[in-house]
Image 1 (cartoon, rainbow, N blue to C red):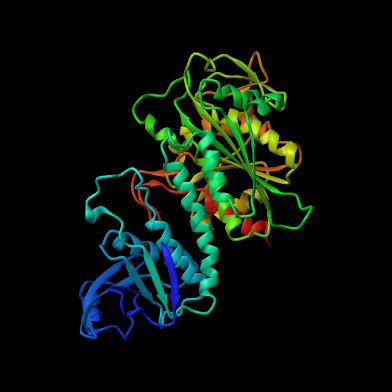
Image 2 (spheres, rainbow, N blue to C red):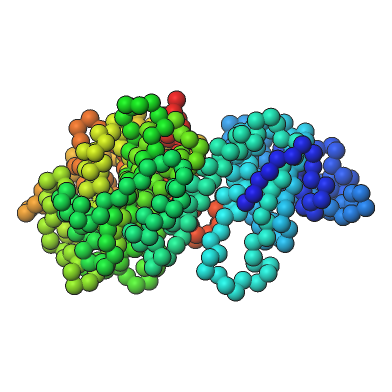
Length: 485
């Protein structure tokens, strides 16, 4: 979506829009539009859209009014929803250009950037494999021209545009089918997208991981013909010598469940079991794009979990990179096996003060929270508070769950240091307890279980149905608030 700024309204545009605060219709609207909006009970509620037609300079002009709600604490989120409502309404309208006139709107630079971010995010759709769309189903809107914007709006948009690009990349990775995105192609897609950004990418292959003793991650991958990878993305934009913040993403590019195979119905959804790694990659792209003044490392553990003759069996015991042993009770509890080795490696390599992992880890989290919040577990109250705040400001909401010794004993094994699953009850908590055993002393750590958040069966405020991009904005907001100062 191309966005440009002009001093005066684009006179040639057939479609224009005005941003309207609730219960405050602009007095300078054409009479037909003003009366039509009133008759239609348009009040400017958040995301409400009214469309009318009027004559200007001998031509009929299509004018949309979109509601931004009442000014207040939720102003940025409301404006984002207003922009998204315009995209949802006109993406397939046949119009190619949308002119947004901000004259008299009293919006600040950040307000304008938020509105445009919502518009761009809602306009994203993955149509690469759809070859028989009817004309009225095809995306037509390709450009937005903003007039009478406040000073600094274009600069503010440059920053938010980088974030939108990162979210879109997360969605792209999650939306792609597993025959297209697998460990090696995930790496290659990232290498192509990060080229020229200033970020540093490196990759550990299977032999290197074996030499390091990553028996848990490699155990998950051994049933697949697709070789595992550990992708590392470095963005060192902060002060030299400052300890980096590390984000670790679960990247199971397809999860059959392994020998503990999943039911056939719905298994196609497991292409998005790499949503944690996708969020990390998208957030890193956003931070590189906006030149974040922070030292941040993204680590993506990339595997495919398949059930062939070499696959890991229930009852197998693996030795993790940390030296701890795990009795694999269920091969479908594979994400924690990937993460534990990736987390150990990241701590030994970078000695971070703070480490956050993101993973579509448990179905139990979807039972607990549905598709409204991601689950948060942490060994540090201040870190948890900062992540909760970042979730609220970014819209990627979180809800905190407990960690306690009472749960920890549920994963004790009679023949190894631990089991990879506990009983049915508290499944998300015991998964977090498992991961906590791989956190070094003194490291502030949080685990985000985002199983219900990376994919949506129906459209949301700023996404169409499908990949939501959840997690990328959360990471970016957390880094802005806590690492850049």
